[in-house]
Image 1: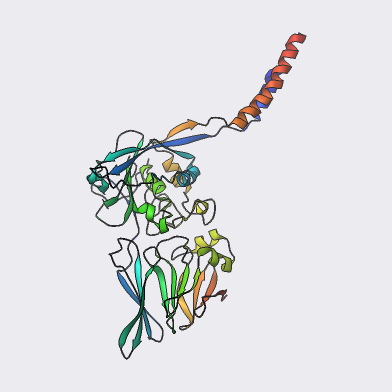
Image 2: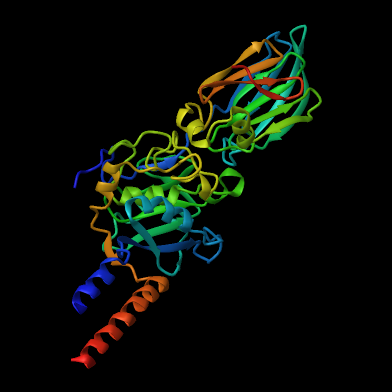
Length: 235
Length: 175
């Protein structure tokens, strides 16, 4: 009887959703003498990134900043100076003044990331974009590369898809235009979600029950315990 | 796990980049009396452009005014009108622009300015529907065209046709 009651109570609780976590180490790169530090506001567009990657059940976890002085890295040739894909499961994210090469030379590169490998770089022009609002989805886009997604595979290519190339992709002007809201930017296809969530960089995390859920559980268990004690004392 | 297609000699590093517009482009009014030139002063390093309006008489150009344009890179489309009015349409960047439509007059005054929300209000369809149908940036389906050469422009968006009056910048639905 008691066990049946306990089962009924606990099975009625909302399920604790299992999510995936992607851990990222941001590096602020400065010149050799400590000046001209990139991303001076240390902006990560974390709320935007979390909203985008929530489509795949992925939570972005940023570790505390590390500042590194290197004039060479601050005008980054991704092809030769980044050092190639990094080891380990913590994503290496460099914030630099400019990116001069990324699979080839070019100006005006906002971000660059290895596909299905660890490492990406974000240039300062991301933060001056759109009159200073910023290119809100570039960090999420480059993380998508690290998770195995390209510009034209797994259904990418449309203007409202996160992984579509910068020439075509619509960039949100606020978090309110990121899918499922507003104009619906930065969508992921099911094939992209399947591919990304298969990445070895992700770790399953068990969500800590929210206080409200814990209170609900407690409020249910107390009467059960009282019932059990009364029954026991009646025996 | 499948491997994404990528052209690279060593490791695949696709970039997030927007191709630059032409360094200089001219837009001529239907009666050929005005020319509006958009150009970059610094090879798009600052992603800002300069607009210059010229009057053409007897084959000679006379500069009427110059101004830096507020758009990211530059306007996506430009229509130069018969009275020296210049309609700047959308931005080169694919964003819900504050400068979705901007009308300047012959004296370099801003006659009207409409953001994306104002466009949506006239179209009277959900934001998502506009974006889903947009082919040139967020909201434009087909490049703009003259409805009445030099005086009103029509732009197809979200299955409707938006009319812009070049006299005052007012918006209405053509159909």
